Each structure stands twice: as structure tokens, then as C-alpha cells.
Image (cartoon, rainbow, N blue to C red; front, side, top):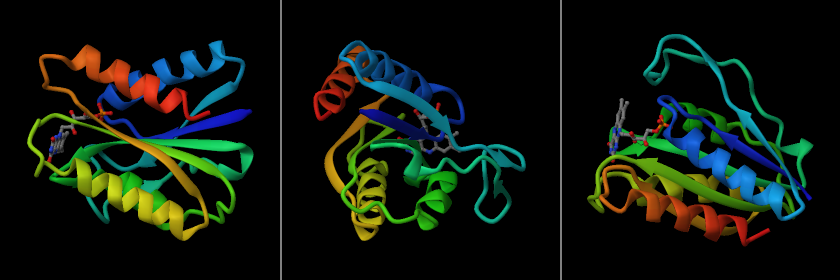
Length: 155
Ligand SMILES: Cc1cc2nc3c(=O)[nH]c(=O)nc-3n(C[C@H](O)[C@H](O)[C@H](O)COP(=O)(O)O)c2cc1C
């Protein structure tokens, strides 16, 4: 199965998780590609002050994994804009993860996942699993591994 990891990563955390998922999927016989959304404009991306430059095409893949950071207690604005212009995803299996700094429940992780899930489902996707990685946690390595394992085993 050709699996697209469509991500946005500002400082590299979300990308580092994607690389681990990619390795795991490739080692189990899939072809996994990291396809990063890029923007024009300065970072951190401020709502209304950037444009999407590379817009990954979900149609290029059999299944999809979306990953993004939480920013300002909400989904990162770049992934927000990308999610708003998603094409039809009928019958595509999707997994979603976010990375965030703060271990608080109210720090935007659940809301960001919910937003991405809703956008994918509105286009007909089947969201098979979601994960939140808290970067500041002492057990970060364990949490990253859990995210990588749980997402990889969906495919
Ligand atoms: C502008 C900005 C806002 C952020 N806001 C939050 C936040 O509201 N809650 C949180 O838990 N982490 C927040 N973070 C931390 C990031 O979510 C976290 O470091 C994430 O793993 C970064 O992913 P990336 O390296 O892929 O960009 C923020 C980071 C930045 C740069």
C-alpha cells in the first residue's frame, strides 16, 4: 500500500515522528512517503499571513496519515488551511496525530484532532485512529513509540 504522510512541521517534532512511522511502515512492506505542506510567508505562520506553496495531493496515495503541531491551543494554522481545501477522500483510510508541548488536557490536542477528523470525515474518509504526542513529557520516547506503533499497525 502506498501511504502518504501529509504533515506540517515548524520546528521538526512532527517530522521526526513521521520519519519513525515511515520507517516502520516501510519495514512492514508498505511504501510510505513523507509529503510536507510548505508555505510562503514567515514562520510561525499567522492566520491570513501565509499561502500554501506545496499542497500535497491525497489522491496520490492509497491511505493517509496527517500530522501537525498544536499552536495557540488550536490546530496549527497551516494544517487548518490545508484541511479546509481537502479534496474527496471517499473510502480512504486515514490516521491522524498531533504533537504538542504542554501535558494539559486543555492545551489544544483534543480539539486539533477533532478538527482534522471532522474535515477528513466530511470528505468521506474513514479515520481509523488518532494519537497525541506530548513533547514535554518525561516519558516522551515511550509516547512517541506508542504513537508510531499504534498508527503503523492500522495499515
Ligand atoms: C507559535 C507556537 C504556539 C504553540 N502553542 C502551543 C499550545 O497552545 N499548546 C501546546 O501544547 N504546545 C504549543 N506549542 C508547542 C508545539 O505544539 C510543539 O513544540 C510541537 O511539537 C511542535 O511541532 P513541530 O516541531 O512539528 O512544529 C506551540 C509552539 C509554537 C511555535
